[in-house]
Amino acid sequence: MKHNRIKYLALSGLLTALIVVFTAWLHVPIGKGYIHVGDAFIYLAACFLPRSYGLLAAAGGAALSDCLTGFAIWAPASVLIKGLSVLCFTSKGTKLLCTRNLLAPVPACILCVGGYYLYEALLYGNFAAPLVSVPGNLLQSLCSTAIFLLCSHTWQRWRVGNRI
Image 1 (tube, rainbow, N blue to C red):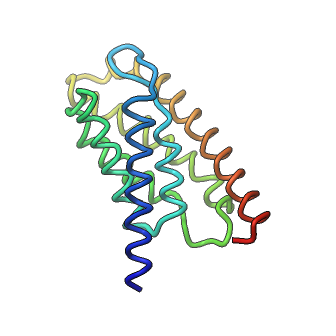
Image 2 (image 1 turned 90 degrees about the vertical axis):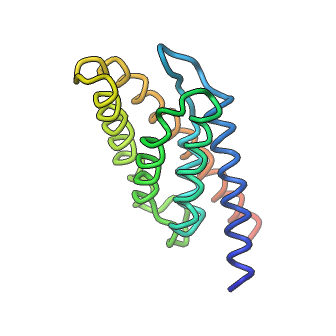
């Protein structure tokens, strides 16, 4: 039992670091923000780790990224949105790309786009200004989904080939 906790804690730390790197430093500036593929690693954390560890990695990585890049005002929204995104996925199956995990990026995208839209509307005090961010958030979710599917497929093929 203790061995599993240590393993999950180490893996959640690694995935938190990947989320930070692919969000905070490997991104494309656009408008007042940026587009990143860190969500792909949030999705992977949700699939590899038990729910509580996946939530920790997702919320921690997203909040750290916002704070390290000068967008700390977005950290509360990121913690909530990315945490809820983790709930769309499952780590209980024998395959990484089970039906639920193949479909999960759809509600995760809706949470991301809708959540940031509502938070931005709250920040700016109107519902028109955040409409500018919707295409970028959609593109970010689509790119993250593509990388998640590619990494998951590659992992499954490698795992089957090496009998882990």
